[in-house]
Length: 204
Ligand code: SF4
Image (cartoon, rainbow, N blue to C red; front, side, top):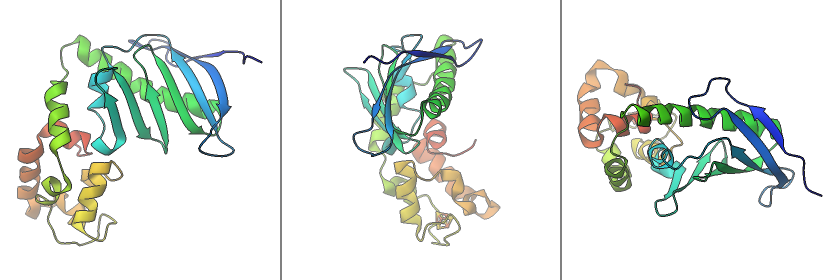
């Protein structure tokens, strides 16, 4: 039997997305007891997805240029966003949870739409290319390399790897906030650039 669609208002005055419809709910095939949810947003996202893709650390995103399909590995699940505004989400507990999460993603989509409209987006191809060339050593070489463990990792290299995978954020390296390590921050800025620093969790 076909499920009855449920429409949710996400934002009364959203600059692009305002509503999401839950089109289908099925048992999640990779996580017993959880569901997979298929949603439809009320606008197409062709112009947004490439710019959205470069807002996440490399380990969190898979973007298919040719098809303009973005898969995010966030909130401990896979979320695939299609240019038509269709969104699939697995490993979800309830329909309401899927709406809470889609609302957060749509906040970012609406912000990105505004940036595109105002011509404030970075050159995503250049950014994508640069992000794909960053390895753990790029980050590690600029870290304090004290293995102090204050970030919760046992070594600076482990921290660098987690930053790249999106599991840790650059600002969690405590020493980078101290005066004695300003040159390390400068090193990161010159190797990565401000935009990628932000993507990797540095609060500018
Ligand atoms: S807090 Fe910074 S310096 Fe200390 S182990 Fe973590 S990454 Fe290395």
